Length: 440
Ligand code: UDX
Image (cartoon, rainbow, N blue to C red):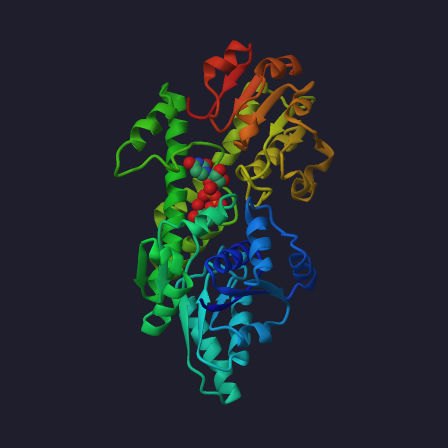
């Protein structure tokens, strides 16, 4: 059992804090936002993440998890301090490190005994070393000779399955050269260690690179299949069969080969841009990643163009949009392809009727720029009623089993854009609808 402070109660912080407590550690989660802490103390979770509320409630009840705004008290009481604050993109695509620096310096001003400082935020390679300097500078200023270690321990959790991902990781990456810090990290993740989860022990820079390389590779994989899909459309091939067969090659693997409107979310777009920026800074451009970034932007617009190509002039046309979140099981619309697609369709004169099971609240302000062109519907069928086309942008489970006859009756024109390839062409056509997928 290790005493832990987690700084930052955003996505990574709240999931990590709750799950680390569930591993048997004593965890105090810290945030400067007192409203957020007040809510968390009452068990109100600020993010939509299946299973998180239960794990928070249980660990609070059992006394292993607490929330506070008292940074100093929490840090002083802990052996391990996790930094889990945001690293939002700056204008040039690089990660903005101001919150990481603020927290690192604050740690330097606060610690009173040997402390392991763990970075969980995704940060450019070299930030761990910088954090060490920031902490040391503050200690020197205080005239304090307190030893500490900085560890990089990147997080690979996916929104919607974050609790599962944290508790069943493919690997745990521990970046440090210090034996004592490494051993305390094993204690932090003791249940996983006992379960023989692979541990990758490496230096700070490699751990930081592992996170970027993993996310960039997955983004490349998606972009690759999207480009193959586009080419399938022109050549008469069916990307579903292509991806299935290509993915059967064990060296390639079938995951993240699903074509669609492009990747979105809080990680892939941000991390690919940051990695590209790091490459340029070092005079070693990561040209594949640069290419994926622009291809992904094109992919989003291609979806709007696909709709325009079928419907012609969009003035006076209404399009039902099913799905606004960047993927299913989340209310998150950060970098969602739906934003670019809806904006493009609205610019071209279309009226949009939007439905998403979780993201409509967020859509109100994310799509504020096209407010005059959109209305929200209560259900899939209400969105379709009187529309000229229906487009599925997010593969929510409830969109996978639509009553196609009812959809056909509701639509004025029969266009069914399955932009996540979740339907079989024949079943859609059997209902009298015109099927348009991606790459088939
Ligand atoms: C991702 C990584 O998976 C996770 O390991 C990392 O730590 C954070 O970023 P997340 O952003 O939550 O997680 O979503 P993910 O499920 O990976 O999907 C990312 C985007 O790619 C979504 O927009 C999704 O719709 C899209 N995607 C995914 C595809 O278009 N095709 C695929 O085959 C897979």
